Image (cartoon, rainbow, N blue to C red; front, side, top):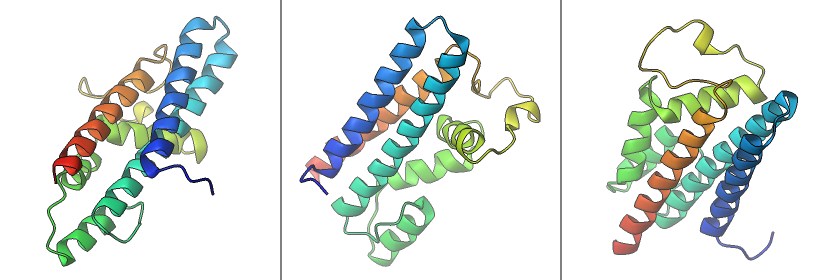
Length: 156
C-alpha cells in the first residue's frame, strides 16, 4: 500500500465520483450514462467507507465498516462520535440520502431489486434515470459530512 493518508484516499474517491458525474452530464449516450452513474455510485460508497476508516483511526475504534459496530466500540470506550451518531440516524431513515446511496449501491452492485418500484413517497430522492441528480446530491451531502467530521476532529 502506498503512503497516502486515509483522508487522501477518501478525497481521491470523491474526486473520481465528481469526474464521473461530470462526464455523465456531458455525454449524450444513454448507455454510457448508466455505466458512469454506476461507477460514481461505487466511488461514493467507497468514499463513505473511507470516511468510516478515518473515523475509526481518529478515535482508535475497531476499523469496522459497520456504523453500528463502530458506535458500540465508541460506547465501550465512553466516546461520543457525532459523525457516527449522524450516520446511524441517516441509515435508519429510509428517506435519507445515505439510505438512498446504500440502496443504489445494492441495486447496482449486488443486483438487488430497486425499492423505488415498491415505495411510493414524495419524500424519496430519485434513484437513477434522473440525469445524475441523485448521484450529485449524494456527492454533495457526503462531501459536507466529511468536511464537517474533519473540522470537528481537528478541533478535538
